[in-house]
Length: 446
Image (cartoon, rainbow, N blue to C red; front, side, top):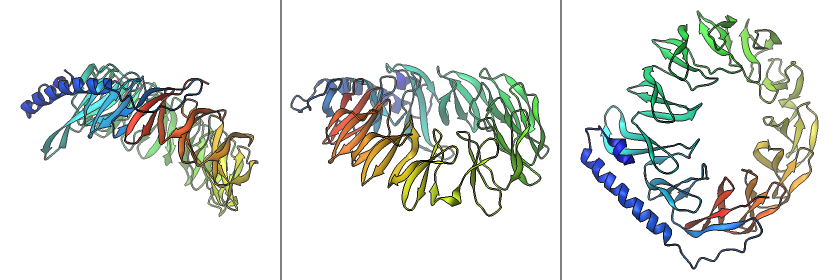
């Protein structure tokens, strides 16, 4: 039924659609049958308390993804579908493209093997629920991700929005368009910029020049008029006058603006918070920003008062702050500084995870082994692993002596190190692989 809806009303390829629909029904029956005929001779490792093998290594897929809304997308023979937590096919592998579920909705598509001189490959998009029931056929040239319950779509090079029911909530009447933020989306019409709400109502008229589109942040959106930049509020009222040569959107309550050839920072009321004395400026993040005065000292991290916290030139390398800490490299070793610029964790580490601190822990490497430390530098997960992965839902896959297992945030062994591969953790579940087949682990609770 889903594919029939997807292709309904298309003149080109009707016979192909009927055949594909028949294949759809056949695949459902075959998929269910194959998943019910499990392999009984697969040896399952002994399970510690709280951990168990839900499905043995009997699932034949070329790719699997993490679980979301109780479903995981899987690929077989170049086609995509979804399985439930027991490995049973909920939606058979019949799609050319499939995304993970979000808010109970997934985007899927089927491409016809027909070349169109203007559009290229023709893709038919659809929305499905977690039971595989079609929500709507979505026949657009482009379908974006859902945000605030709305997804950007394009039809004949014009943009509009659909809701999670697949209904065209905002007609495809606009030139470029941005995503919804704070209940509004920037749209352009005849090179003029305005804003609409989720019903398609024009909330802020098309009176600004379309140069770029900025989301609302902190109740302010950057607009351009008569060669100058200013900011409006969500009612369309001019909140900060058009007096800047250039500007960036608000971030962390402040916006970088250019006046007299120098950058400074203003608050949402238009008050100058950091003076106009920078040659280069970036967006604030985690209460700090990387900016350069052009005085030969290079980029420095400054706080919201303009106080210098750390200078790039004082280190061999300095990475972004996360959770109030930044990795710094000196003499071939990594340590961490806090948001006052003080060395908080000594230069003891050979390498580290790209995301720095996440949920109070940072992945670091010492003596050629990986572990986790907390913000005080205490060892949270001991240095005994050949590789570690980021935590997801309180669990992280790891490699020890060539075998995969799973750790919890206290460094406990949630899953023994007896597997060829473990990954794609989501909702307390993980796929594991033995040979060329997949199984599913329930990681339990700790």
